[in-house]
Image 1 (cartoon, rainbow, N blue to C red):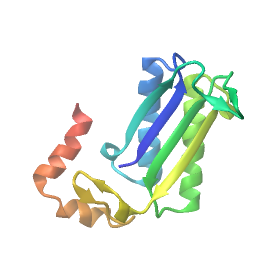
Image 2 (cartoon, helix red, strand yellow; image 1 turned 30 degrees about the vertical axis):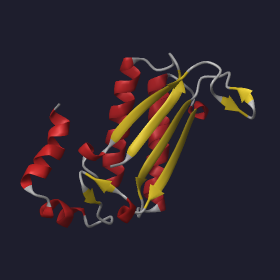
Image 3 (cartoon, one colour; image 1 turned 90 degrees about the horizontal axis):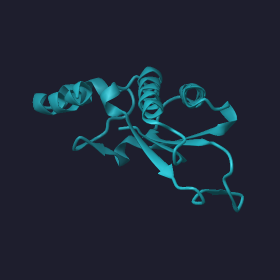
Image 4 (cartoon, helix red, strand yellow; image 1 turned 60 degrees about the vertical axis):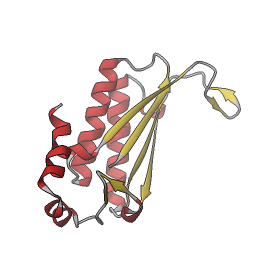
Amino acid sequence: MPTYTCTAAEGLLNENHKSRIAMTITTAHADVKGAPAYFAQVIFQKVPPGDHFIGGRPLAHDHVFVYGRIRGGRSAVDRKALIHRITDEVARIAGLPDFSVWTYLLELPAAAMVEFGRVLPEPGDEPSWNEALPPEDLDRMTAILSR
């Protein structure tokens, strides 16, 4: 499950921003990576004033930091498209210039990840992985989207 953590100063992102950012990251990941939307999760962290430093000095400007931990094995073109799309859309939603959104993607090998109780498939092996799931597991996974 790709996990994106968005970190920003306390009060910078309101509930509307968070909802829209979560949806745009989920959609971007699904579009670019071809993964079902129910795999993506987005977590928000707020940083109290005085708790974020850059270059040894307190961060004095509005920034959003997006850390994505995703399954490796995709092309450089796809990674670049995803990172630019996330950066551009988060900046637009938050009302910030692009230089204020820092986006990082960390790729993990599929064999080093367990989601929904199962080791993840290599990219391209998702159809056979999904077909091997017991129907009740697939139902639980897809039910996440209907909540």
